[in-house]
Amino acid sequence: MVSPEQGNSRSVSINTLKGDKARVHQGSVCVKVEVPRSAPRSGNLLLGPLVVFDELERGEALLFARYITCVPALPLLLVAARLQLRPLVDDETGQPLMDAHGQPLATLKLDGALNFRTSLFVAQRVAWLRLRLQQTFEMRVTRPRDRLAPNHLAAVQAAAVAFAGSRTGAGLGSGFNGGSGGRGRGGFNGGGRG
Image (tube, rainbow, N blue to C red; front, side):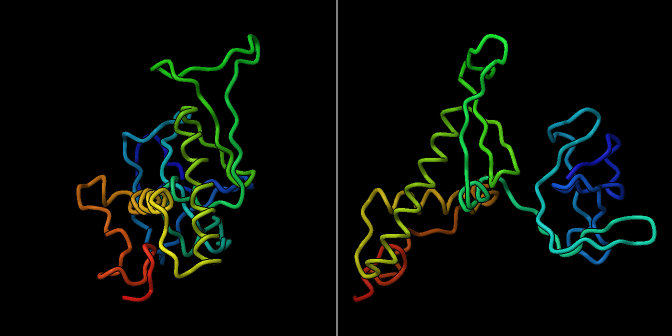
């Protein structure tokens, strides 16, 4: 989602993966979405949140996105079908590119479409968490009554904090209590029998 430099919320537009520009439909609950002035920039445009939409509707002169929702990037990284991690290197020298703190940079490519640039350390941790979550869900499907190992439970808790997103950033807590379901029943911590 991008917005012109002036920050006029009426002119917020969405760039689709196909390169089309669409406006948020007037009937959408996200019609008043704003792009903060502190958002990253691409040229003279402010880059806003990622949005998922159900359909594009062609109006008389404009293209409108209907049924949209804003999504944070980290949960997308955890649930995407395919994630590719590539270290960034300088084309001329072949040396790894570094961030302001001297850490090597990497890109995470999501389902062959979205690219995220981050430090190599963070990219490796996201890839590790995805692998650990996959193992956890496979274990839960094959042995639903067994308790999760501490490393699998830690992965689920880390994912829950990531999905909680702005709640934890605002100091509201993650809303995740470890999944014990009280007295050790159900949830991810398992048992099923009290």
